[in-house]
Length: 77
Image (cartoon, rainbow, N blue to C red; front, side, top):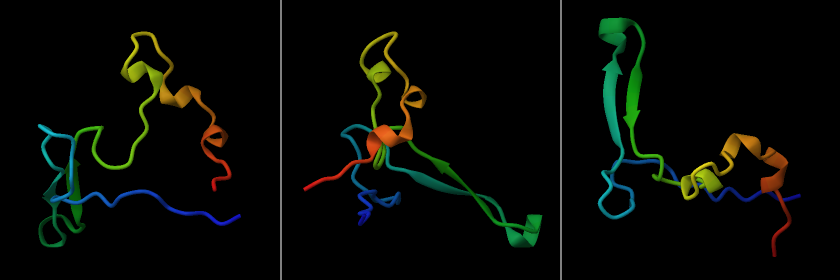
C-alpha cells in the first residue's frame, strides 16, 4: 500500500484560521546555558493538520481518543 503524507509543516508564517495567532517557537534552553537545546511551541489546537472529534461541536460528544486509529486508514481514489 502506498502511503501519502497529507500533513502540513508547522511554521511561524503558516496560514491559520482567521483571528487565530500563528504558531510561536520560543527558545527555552540552549547548549551554552543548559547543555541541551529545547524550544517551546505555542499554538492553538486548530493549527495545522488536525481532526475535530464530535466533542468539538457537541457537549458530551465522543473524544478523539475513543476512536481506534484503524478507523482513519483507508483506500482512496
